[in-house]
Image 1 (cartoon, rainbow, N blue to C red):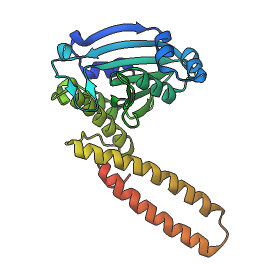
Image 2: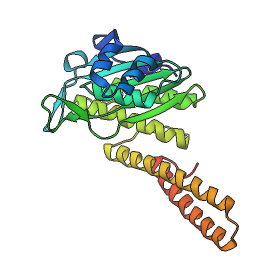
Image 3: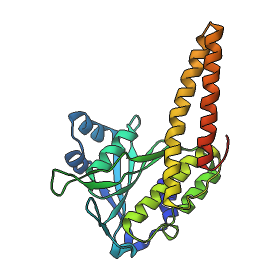
Image 4: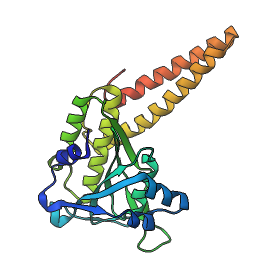
Length: 257
């Protein structure tokens, strides 16, 4: 999977395309709060490209404004990392630095990461935006299931996303990424039918991740435990966790893996 394939799947109109290189210096100056972050940007990034700018005049979708946010534009960016570049931290710095909601692809060797994050106005600083919640990300490598990735890129098409506002469009892309994250677990890609279903899927994904970590922890304890009564107790706990995991997987689109 490549950024070019993602961009092609989005099917953006020519009027939205920018294709402009962004100097790293701009990101260092606006998005690096610490000296370590400045070094990470300077040493970890090979190049940054601003691929597209989605505005009412370029895509025919209205801007969005309410008491906490103002979505006048969606930026589409691609970053090429050098080996050992920290993709998640760099993605967070980019989302914090750019005042617009950003559809970001980050590539490093054979791996491609996609991340998105809502923005809102800062409460105590005029004209400054901050992240509205955690950013959403998914990591894809060259061995990922090709059928799922083809379905995902097709679902990214602008024609298949909400057109009510730029906020609705951005949330639609976030919901599509959530559907992909679910598909990478279940093996089946199905787009969420409603925002409520997408939100439930996202919560289920977070819950499954926590359950998997707890299941691994309990299994490790059980493997070392010598007392029979304690082994029985741990096995019962595992069964409860596995049952809960099965229920959560059902919310992702299938009953089991």
